[in-house]
Image (cartoon, rainbow, N blue to C red):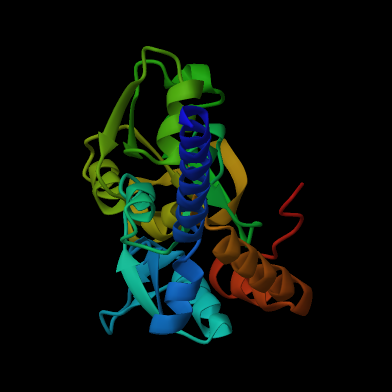
Length: 266
């Protein structure tokens, strides 16, 4: 009798455990269903990183990533709720469900892949070291004894920290506007940032005599999706892949970056 009761309890416990696993799995993948039900998708976008995301004269966000976010929403048939993010907070926003997607020049790395998932790439991103023409910088060893402005938590931060010698004074700022301002105002000798940002900075401040020095990264940009959201991930991949085939992604690149996509997987 005791053995029968024990066996029944074990079976009941296993059944309950499986039910919890099934419930957790369902809960972990309900974001797409919630989006379609609410007819709204929350998308994290940059607002301080032209031409990917910036505030226009009408005080509304615009740029490649902004337009990409709106494109994804339109293909889903829902409204885009655009949420400004920065390099340090964009992944936490995704993890805490303050955003359903991150479309913010997001690059892929092994550490990031441990905490979020990435779609197929949709755009190309180039970052580099820039400085005055009067300063000779031919390789990363030449950064020794120089100060370099970077945005905290960005790939520029990761890359220049890895490539520069220990004697380099890397000064980290909380967003791209602060990083650019630091270099323009003479707080640092050099700046590491995205090529489009640098181009805009150079055009607005010709007195700096700034120019390209060293490439730190030439890489694809991806849309970030929370872990466990396979349904949403697969749907966004489907939309991007279709946009690659019909030329929509190429048009976005030409419009905002003035260059084609090339081979994003190369």
